[in-house]
Amino acid sequence: MACDLLADTAHPGNTETLESGWFSPDALPPLSLGRNLPELVRRMVVLARQPELGVDLD
Image 1 (cartoon, rainbow, N blue to C red):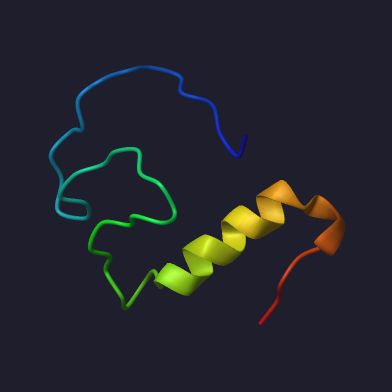
Image 2 (cartoon, one colour; image 1 turned 45 degrees about the vertical axis):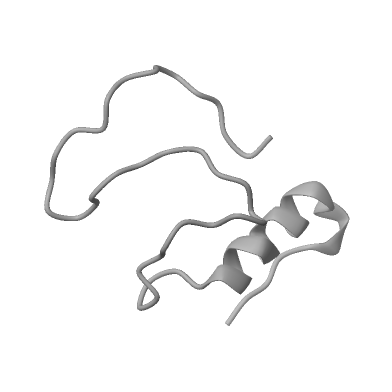
């Protein structure tokens, strides 16, 4: 697991994020493509499941 749920609370309003939630890497919600690409999210999942692959650097 890449993270632990610390509290089950409502998402606070802010100008950065409209909402938050849990989702499957195979069913991503619309992303801010200037900041997050679907292929990068999927790659993070692969690396979390297979830490022996190391890290990706750019």
